[in-house]
Image 1: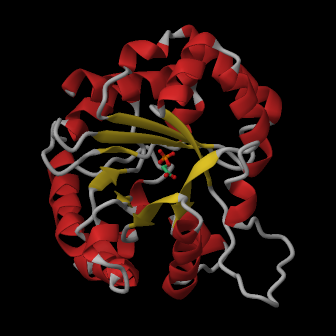
Image 2 (image 1 turned 120 degrees about the vertical axis):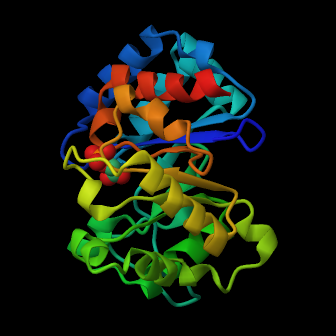
Length: 265
Ligand code: PGA
């Protein structure tokens, strides 16, 4: 990571683990670590809770001393894991969250997570669909965090870079200026939720490749990141932060990961 461009740490809370009560307890615990100590002009923290927890979580964060300051300063932001791909004069979609609802000031989402491998796998999200979600999210001012990464099979076949390049192909339609505002998360599928990390120098190599192809502002790494391993990744020059999932559901782990980044900035 490099202090000039800064870092982004985003917690990706999974679907069944964060009831509203759990999300509120997380907020209280996180605030208890006095997280304003992490404030750096170039460190951005983002939480991606399940949709049901976005509103109550943000209200709680706004009512706690440290997290309130962080939200008000923009150092902490809330994102959505779901946003609609479809819009048109006559288009009305059931079961989807349109970005217009998410940017409602009462909800206050400002980031959108897109292209996660679990969505590609379980919801059969194609690059084409992800491109539509991305376009609509950006049209409404949501900042995207686009996930890319190869499966174990693709890695063993030696096609990891080809796969990532194909997934990043959806950026071809975007101007260089827009790309330069974006965050891409390189997440090898075999490292997600498995406790197996990519080797930091391999992850660095892949993140460098992602940066070259995407020409994005930030490239972060995801896949079983925990507080004790985070610094090893953040010391790599091509890795600008992390997208922890399971670990981020524990306030102390998320704080520890953010602290590892803050210490290097
Ligand atoms: P993990 O999840 O940290 O639990 O591997 C990462 C992710 O899903 O983004």
